Image 1 (tube, rainbow, N blue to C red):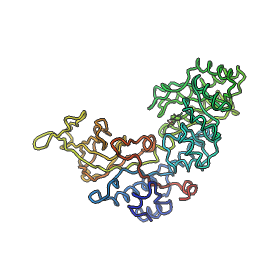
Image 2: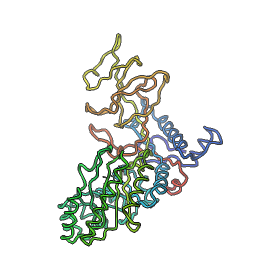
Image 3: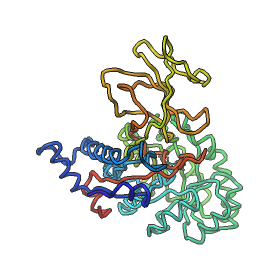
Image 4: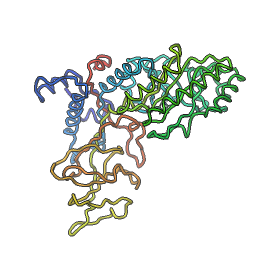
Length: 444
Ligand SMILES: *Cc1c(COP(=O)(O)O)cnc(C)c1O
């Protein structure tokens, strides 16, 4: 059923170890008949993921394993990506998603989405090539980087990736030189102050500039085809979409006055799992109010598609006791910026070192479940800022060799791992599918 650990760890970076039916039969035997195979709240998915996590951890003995066998690894549930796609289609039927590759360029994710028929938002040569390599037609790509490397622009021209964004005059001259027939999309800025990761401080033209850019594009005889925006990654204010759509309408009207017939509105990314329905309904209302049905509407969701699909497991590679009080060493923790102070609910307090740099601690393998212990959690590098959680409480005393896992690690994690200090940024991924539809498309 599963490959030997050595072959998973040493010969294959990405290993498909389970398929839907096998998982189901495993769950049947473990959890009894009568349980639904697929539940809408992803309960089955969680069981499947836990099972694979436990199986993999059981293969690794940190007292005897080879270097790097205890490295952090992911379990990816492609069924989750599939469910998000169906949810997108039913809530935003008018908006075609162009998945933002940068969010998680995992090849199985890209392969599934290509089969589901989405488009792709690429921002570099490598991302463009990765998507084209899957056999995706260049017309399904938007080169959504308003500040493009010149050689990449020539590469896009050669590859036939014609649709691209711009937000400044210099970019128009660059496009005029390297790809005068490109189908260019004017990116405007938005009020993204409520988002998790602001983008409009770096990208997007204000409305006044947008009008100037349209005139310049006209002078240069360039093919302006639409307007785009991004309300910020992890957007929190649903009215940001309404405002941005209205601003985009204004730009459409300015373009109209210059005899441009714009046909594309790109509403960018920013969608999150928790607030998706609210955002979708606000967006639909705004689209209905400002954009007649003949205008094609696309979006560039990243986080929405992958955040929940990946779980990360990390091994505790070191531990430092920083408890204060009689008989316990105070240790060098006092020299760090955030030596944790034990609260009254704990007897001991530890610093743990992991061999990865995840962000949010969610749960753990623990021994003494009745006692909450305070931990600060640190990455493996020698950098003092390499801290994952300055303070968190976990049940029981964790030791070297124990594992933690972090849910919802699919967005902006895999792709932003560091190689600092010689630690790897290549983490093995094991794939499962909790949806029969996804399994069928992927051939699992
Ligand atoms: C990062 C990015 C996205 C994806 O944003 P999410 O918040 O992950 O949906 C989409 N479009 C552009 C231009 C981006 O830079």
